Amino acid sequence: MNAITDGQTHSTESRASGRARSRLRHWGSALRRRARRDDGMSTSEYAVGTLAACAFAAILYKVVTSEGVVSALNQLITKALDVQV
Image: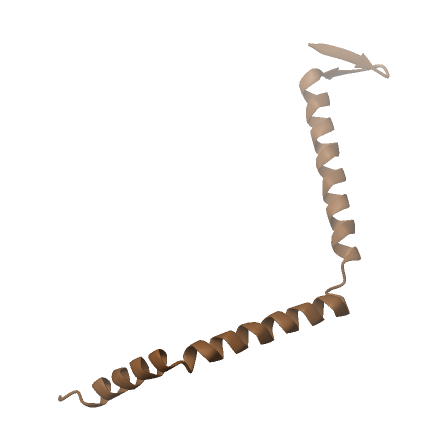
């Protein structure tokens, strides 16, 4: 099927693919504009990230220094050092 536009003959498929390319270009340029606007984390995001990292470190320290973990690590090290070759 052909349509005449501005004295030229274009098929329906080529017009559809042209619209798809146009939408893709528009989507790509919008994505690039959004990426350029974001220069990194703001001060509040750094503060929240630092607080979360400190909380995780505190919990990890409590777990690793708990009696059960310390006992298991001591047994593992003792067993490894007592291996007869």
